[in-house]
Image 1: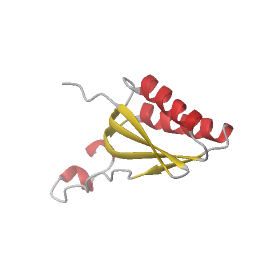
Image 2: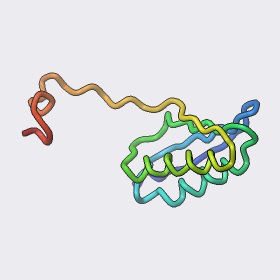
Image 3: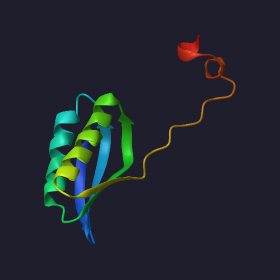
Length: 104
């Protein structure tokens, strides 16, 4: 089963909270971009992009966030990221964690 993305929005005081779930990648970028643009258009002062339930994010997902930042600036809306997942620490027993790029 695919881990599709979704954006659920709620209002919290002067902020619109956009809770992103699922993957942020090349397969979901167009839908995510549209949903975040709608959130920015609806926001009065600020959009909080909440990322707790994001399972993965590739360069296309990062570009969605950068594009959202640009759109927010144009609309004079503050955009912030919240609850950015922290990747797991490397396994100290894994030889690849002590070598150069790509395990060289």
